[in-house]
Amino acid sequence: MNASGNDAALQTCVLTPIGRGAIATVAVRGATAAEIVGKYFCPNAGSSHLPIDRIRYGVWSRDADSAIGESIVVCATAETEIEIHCHGGRAAVEAIVGDLVASGAERIGGDSWLQGRSDNFLSSECQLALAATQTPTTAGIVLDQIRGALATATQAAIEQLRSANLEAAGQAIQTLIDRAPLGRGASKPFRVVIAGPPNVGKSSLLNRLLGYDRAIAYDQPGTTRDVLSARTTLGGWTIELRDTAGIHETAEAIEREGVQSARREVQSADAVLIVVDASVGWTPEHDEIAKLVPNPIRVWNKADLIDVEAMPDAAEKIFTSTLSQAGIDDLIAAILQQLIPQPHAAGMAVPITDRQLACLQEAQAAIASSDATSAAVHLQRLLRG
Ligand SMILES: Nc1nc2c(ncn2[C@@H]2O[C@H](COP(=O)(O)OP(=O)(O)OP(=O)(O)O)[C@@H](O)[C@H]2O)c(=O)[nH]1
Ligand SMILES: [Mg+2]
Image 1 (cartoon, rainbow, N blue to C red):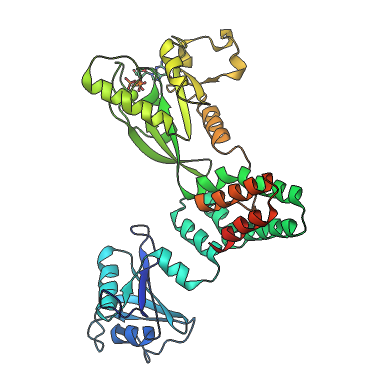
Image 2: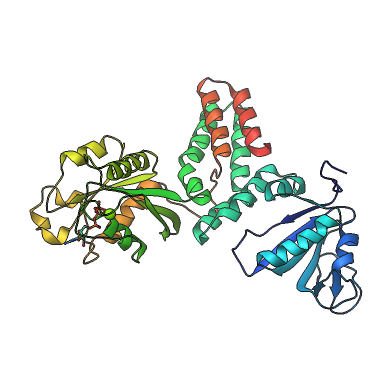
């Protein structure tokens, strides 16, 4: 028994993320898993015996002889591990987990479940990251690592270190570090902040990028007061777009708060769009914002109001019009180019988590000090935690 009075050898975990699908999977493992599930599982036909990897249909019922209960599919995935597939709503999931806990199971989170299940630490870590992916592109990148792409590349670098080939190992590690944005985008959304002085069309651009009207756009400076965020997918990547209040000097207290949050947003973004009203041009307020961001994407909006060809360096600038949609595709391409400079190919080894990237960076630092032994230790840590 553990501190909460449960049988520590019996564990249960909800494998599916909350609110994602119509069906949920509750797993239970331990020497008594089959016995406990047998208390509640009433099969539609035949005995309640659960052969490995064969699905059985039935209901989950507190009265084992009753055919009235939650319709479920049960499958033993190993001698001591059973999956129960039920309706995805909270009520069904919580009822089943509640019965298992009442029967002595300890409820654990996905991290603990995977760590106890596999001796492949790296693969388990990537399986957790897979649950957070939201697009086929990002899921594909993480799946490649579950299948062993990063492990194989790391093992190859360890072999190079063993044969004292520090230069080759360093290059291999650098290649992986350079691919970090791919992994970063696979594990959490990129934050793209839309900034600029008032009334230049920031909220209109947000709406255009989203494809629906999320923010109020109005011909009056100071329309947006607070940070407004919305998620979308651009080029297969999950992006959190953040519209901000127009940054300018103001005496009004509420507006000043909005301007302060806009400044903070700009400093913590993965990419920043600095929006210019092309009919007015670049102003000292733009300079103030540009000082806060190392590499902003300058967007010349309201291009419908000017003669684009007459603008200096027109070919290098991004011109948009939220009225005609002109230039929006160019803008999306520029955002993606900045977020993910490296193209992705199927099967590519990519570090997914901050921990994996830190191991690679520490290994690289050790190589820079010609310390092959400690570089190999950092790479082993990447593989085994
Ligand atoms: N002609 C033209 N007008 C635009 C364009 N984009 C936005 N506008 C207009 O510019 C005005 C301001 O647009 P908003 O999107 O509210 O500007 P904003 O930068 O969010 O303004 P604040 O929230 O006040 O900082 C609105 O009247 C829009 O219709 C454009 O591409 N062309
Ligand atoms: Mg606005």
